[in-house]
Length: 548
Image 1 (cartoon, helix red, strand yellow):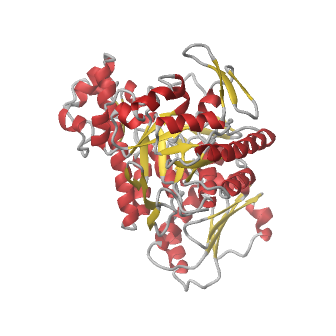
Image 2 (spheres, one colour):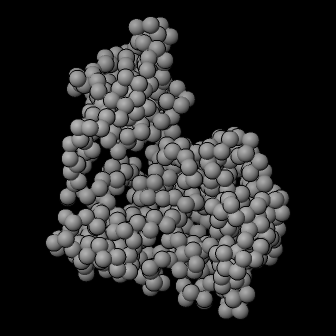
Image 3 (tube, one colour):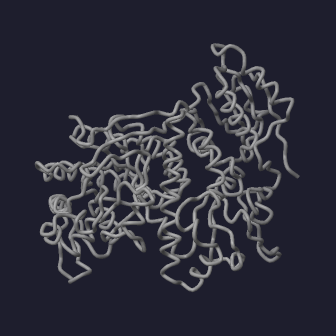
């Protein structure tokens, strides 16, 4: 590949993560990542003004080629000098290609090699959205970054369907690049391949042969589980060149963004900040606040005690609650303004932590609190006697949803990652032997919901931050994976499982840390008594401890 139009530079890479801070240059300014792009589908971010977006720190806005093609049309942008002048926006603009809109209108379009034929919702005209028309429209719009036209499919599609869509996307990428001609606008290729690692590798390898200025990870947040998205994101980001921006399309909540930064992604977009604001949901430094709840009717508190946005410095929760309950447009505007400010401030904090090489402490702290709902006024649920507890196999989930992060009980399963103090001390002492010592082998005699195993993993990660330690091979035995599967479906109640290791283990029978070399976790199917001869000799044995 030739040098990027974006003059990309890597400013810092976290020492114990793939998280990175970068700088690049568009036609309208200097961009620092990680960054979040508010979605301005129709050349406007819903319920927001350009002034508030600029004041909040928005660097790039995202606009939609499909919608702008239909209204106001390319001729308007050509006559008026492009989208920046049209909407009076001084910053940068990225235009998506229309591929997702093709995907979201399955009953109103037909697919051919030439492109997608769809019926206009404006005047009923049938239009062929080809790679060439998509790029011609984006050139007329005058965005700083154009996206190739791709064929998006559900992430859960079968491999045959995913491969066919991938091959179309590859051919369309070549045509999109050719349609750019001599335009100074940058262009990103889009990696597809659904949830199939080999297809993702093929897609990335093919696109990297072409002269793109950056790469996007597409085809996620369209049907897959969270852990599946994170695994594919990590795999795909690692395949992409280090000297180009990496953009995860359509993601997501603050914790989704945090997880993707951890996996090496630089750029994000999503409608969530303004979409949830309409119903009074706000993201804050103390978790999620649901302003429609009556508990805020008399609250004089600021929305977020640490936020410096105009909403938090001016209005009370009581007023925002009132606007939400009465469905006033101003409520949507104010909560949306705060949410966008929160996203941008969060990205600035992440960037600074990467520059100072303290990303992982921030990551561990924030991924927990970001998902808490109404920490100051937790929801209480009445006891239910007529409904059955959720269950799988011989295991049941008992208890009410937690007020903050207190886990309910899972019958005979420990729900928090903890080790006996004596065992913990023994493991630490053995880990501190010379780093070139053979791996410390730890047997977890009963996997259950992986609480004990995760306690070992978290202990290893904590010790690794203090200096070199010897490798560790953790081996868990299990006759029945039902308790772990059940717990993985309720990560809100079992926050230690957000680590991600257990998701990989249950699918592949082995997990190896990318961030702590030498840390490995293996699953052996069967009882400890029957299968222990299949495992390396143990240095430490962790006996099963059940919650009764």
